[in-house]
Length: 238
Image (cartoon, rainbow, N blue to C red; front, top):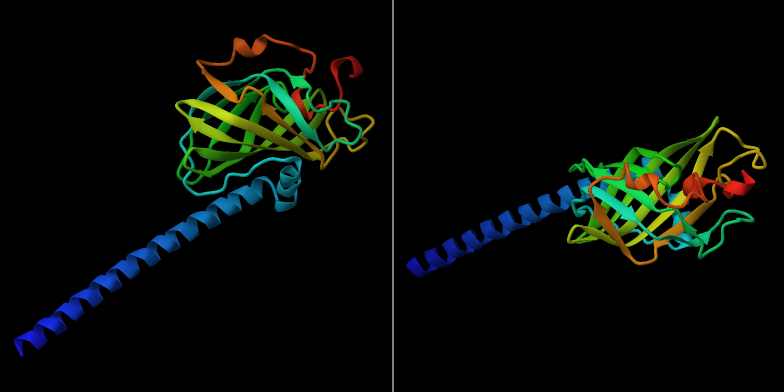
């Protein structure tokens, strides 16, 4: 009788343990699914699937995941080299080296939001209106919607870049931009690249160094391409 009671008690204990573990696992799964839904919604607000697919076709790698590495600091990207373009009859061809780019990444939160301020990317000064970050381990992808102005012309760009954050520096950096809205639709008069078109660049030495700030450094360097990756023509043609 005692033996039977022991077996029954052991069976009940194991059942409770399995139930508790199963409940914990189910809770973790539900939490992960909720995180994925939040992240997916934020990404869709910034860049719909059709635009993200366009950047993938240019060769941009997207690092998915809901546990992105924490990134904070000022970074210098040099040299920034064009890899591929979907701009019709683009004057800028693969291998062209743009001005050095500068980026301040900060205020990353648990809801996958993050803030960006850049110089010499889309325009001379870029501030992200909406942002999100995905990734796992050291690999990450940051999605930004950037408003840019060139004199009286205004445009909106999707700006998505991927890389790895290791020992305080960004490595294997690639950036894709896509023009998604602008107030001048006559392409012959517009100084921005055509709607729906984009460019993919990389840092050819694969290391974006950390700097103390970019106010002074960003004022130096080549000025051949004054408005960054989103401008359709070179300086002499503007």
